[in-house]
Length: 198
Image (tube, rainbow, N blue to C red; front, top):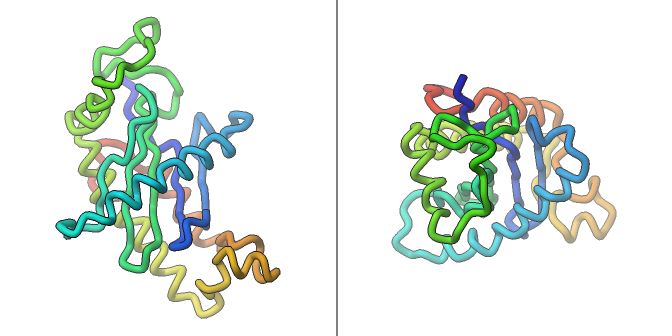
């Protein structure tokens, strides 16, 4: 059975580069220290977000693959018109946490990745139809969930800034909506290459 790529982490980052929500998915959900590791990865991707958003020729909110962390993980980005950023970390080894044989990679064949092979991660996702679905389906579903959150009269976006957290408003600027959490979890659990709708 071939292992298909899956979402390892979804990050929602505010316009002040503050984390609003970070969701982990199997097999990383139960790994000790995974939340901190993915927080660092998302934080490291902020510089790439900034570089990509400076491009004046950009017409889409899709920023594509921000970086390939290694042969296993890659970070994809999307920015809303209000400056909120969505980052999806795709795990090429899938929910099982083992290398995928779908691309001819076996566990014993995994070696450190040379810089020249980082582009192959994007190529592998393109071959499986994953790149388009990450951009088209998962990000649009995330944006819809975020818009629904903003439509909630009890949610105040200004309470989720670093300044609000310092003044004691809200819980450190994090999103606390259970409905939003469940929608993000549903997106992360259902996405896989070849899925028509998330």
